[in-house]
Image (cartoon, rainbow, N blue to C red):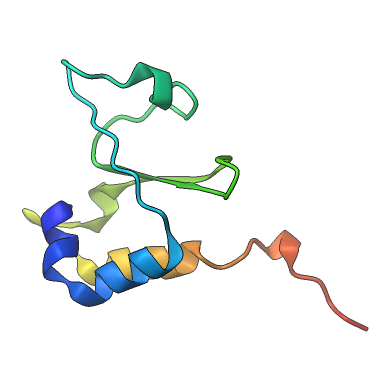
Length: 96
């Protein structure tokens, strides 16, 4: 995932303009239980958690949907990032 963002400047721009990125390591040696215990259990890594500005979980997204062989489909990741930046429908109100 790191290589995908590093080699696709536009994708990095979309991410960096709309998100604060925190990379959390998960391994047998470092399961990061303290941090990850606040979020739903996940089956595989890498994984995206989208949080609001107060840290509340908005979306939990496995990255296998973005896989294309041994790489990632950059277009699918970009669509996900752009879609996830839109305010939830409940925030939209009509002015009359």
